[in-house]
Structures are given as C-alpha cells and as structure tokens.
Length: 359
Ligand SMILES: CC(=O)SCCNC(=O)CCNC(=O)[C@H](O)C(C)(C)COP(=O)(O)OP(=O)(O)OC[C@H]1O[C@@H](n2cnc3c(N)ncnc32)[C@H](O)[C@@H]1OP(=O)(O)O
Ligand SMILES: CC(=O)C(=O)O
Ligand SMILES: [Mg+2]
Image (cartoon, rainbow, N blue to C red; front, side, top):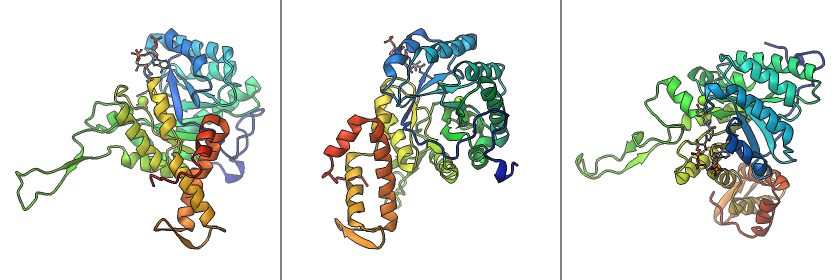
C-alpha cells in the first residue's frame, strides 16, 4: 500500500499530477456507441451537446473481428469532433485479460489522450487491477506529454469486485466512479436470470394468507434484485468521494421499466446510468435531474431554516439540520446541472413557487 504522503505523486516522471478532487461534471447519461458501426458513428456529431457523456465502446457488444476497427474508429471520431464544453468523451476498453486491452490503452492515450476524459475498465476484481492501469496510464501520459490526467471508471461486474468494492474505489486518485454491470455480475454470481439489468417477476414477496386461507387471493410484490449491490456501491463511492452509476437496461422497448430502474438508482444516490439506444437518453436526463417540485421544496426548506440549525414546521412536517442537508444535496445538483443546461435552468427558475415535492 502506498503511503498517504505519496498518494498524489505522479506514477511516472513527466506524467501530470493526479487530481485532488474528482470533477463533478454532469454525467446523467453515459451514451454508448460502437465506433466500428458506421450508422452509429455517423450519429455522434449530432449527439454532442445533447448528452453529458459519449462513450466509444470497445468491449462486449463489439464483435471480435471488429475490435481493431472500433479502436481506430474511435481515434478518427475523436480527432474529427469538437465535443464542446458540456459533452465528455469516455471509452470502455477491453478487459484486462483480453488480447486487445494493451493496444487499446497505448493507441488511445497516445493518439487522443488529450480528448479522453475517462477510461472505463470492465470486470475489475480488486485494487490490483486499478494499480496496473494507474501506472500504465502515467507512463503513457508522460510519453504523450499530456497536461491533465485521464480518470478511471470501474465496472462492478464480478462477485470478487463486489466483495472488494471499497478498496477499488480508493485504489487511485484517478478513480472517477463505478457502474453496476448487472449482466456479467449475474453470470459471475451464477444468478438464474437471463436479462441485462432490470427486475425479475419471480423475485417477489407474497402477502400472508388472509384468515389462514392459503388458497385465497394473495397480493405479490416484485422486489429489486439489484438493491443490495447498488446500495453497497453507493456507500463505497460516497466514502471515497467518487460517483456511482446504474449501468445498462437491456429491454430497450420497455421505456417505463427503464425509467423505474433509473429512478430507483437515482433515489439511492446514483448520479447517472448508461443509455444504450437513443430512446434512453431522454429517460436518463429526466430521471437524473432533480424534479422541479423537489428543487422548489428544497429552496423553501433552506429559506425556512435560517442559519441551518434547529427545527421548524413546514406544511405539517418537521424540518431540521438533517432534512436541510438532504435539501442542499438536491440544490447543489440542480445548480451544477443548470450551469451546463440552460433549458433546465429555465425550468427550475419557472418552478420557483412550485413546492409540489415527491419527497
Ligand atoms: C451488458 C453491456 O455490456 S451493455 C453495453 C454494451 N452494449 C451496447 O453498447 C449496445 C449499444 N446499442 C446497440 O448496439 C443498439 O442500440 C441495439 C443493437 C441495441 C439496437 O440497435 P438497432 O436494432 O439498430 O436499433 P434501432 O433500429 O431502433 O435504431 C434506430 C437508429 O438508431 C441508431 N442507434 C441505435 N443505437 C444507437 C446508439 N447507441 N447510438 C447512436 N445511434 C444508435 C441505429 O443505428 C439506427 O440508425 P438509422 O436510423 O440510421 O438506421
Ligand atoms: C454493464 C456490463 O458490462 C454488464 O452488465 O455486464
Ligand atoms: Mg459486462
């Protein structure tokens, strides 16, 4: 383990100094595209400005025969595109045990390292995987003469990764965040599901028999398969000052259930989710931006709480230092999103008097 004194020292001579704080840039949707797919690639310039993150995917969902074309496609797109102030460029490289990852990292950092904000690393098992990436990125950054460090995002998609999630989050000052990878995680845990994220109708609880009648009608309630993992991931990220994300929702046509899954993650503390298809972009934008009612309510609580201590009654409910802190989380997020999303800023301003909160 590195000494705390050395934690923020560059890991290669000439590499940029690690950041002390992870930039809190909006990342409500991490929009995946396959750079080897000409139709998807052609859509990238039009998505700039309307998505928070564009992610060139090189790993799963890209055919083995297309791995090199995807890598080169991403280089070409990054060089040809101005991503502006408000859209970040991320990539998901191949897994650390694959034959492609070394070339992914070497090529991308050398060719487009100045444009890449975050590298997503799949199937991270423990701190040792992040340490490997950390040193290699420092060497490549130094050689490429980069002025700012590229950040790292891990996917939580193995049982060992979940068991080690706290040490993964704290393994490097490069750690930007973690996404849930429900498909690989389900397989690795030997869960008996076949879906990419979302719930399962068989995972439920059933109402007790009414008057002992076990044959009578009994309501069932579907439960959330991902609650434990997301909650654990959120705590690990919060503890280390980095950002948690729900990952993919594979049932593209079921926009209602997608919104529900995203909202559960938002309420538990996640800051964004993946969009796999253009239809999921608006869902993520809606869900991961606090509602107008919640923002208006938070403003009222802040105003009513004066110096922030004590207790007051508002609409029949007790508010105190702790409920104020929750309101400040909402307000800080609303302000941050407003600064890069003028449309949202206007919506919040127009809703100034609307305290119809969902809280
Ligand atoms: C478990 C995991 O690892 S999840 C992460 C890995 N998976 C991915 O990255 C998947 C990314 N998404 C996709 O591959 C596709 O969206 C699919 C395969 C799910 C569906 O693709 P299609 O069948 O082409 O969908 P559909 O016909 O509705 O597409 C409509 C248009 O949107 C385009 N499109 C689809 N997905 C995307 C995208 N992610 N980004 C940009 N454009 C897209 C299509 O090319 C098509 O373009 P066209 O109108 O010019 O023909
Ligand atoms: C997100 C991802 O890679 C998975 O679910 O496996
Ligand atoms: Mg996966």
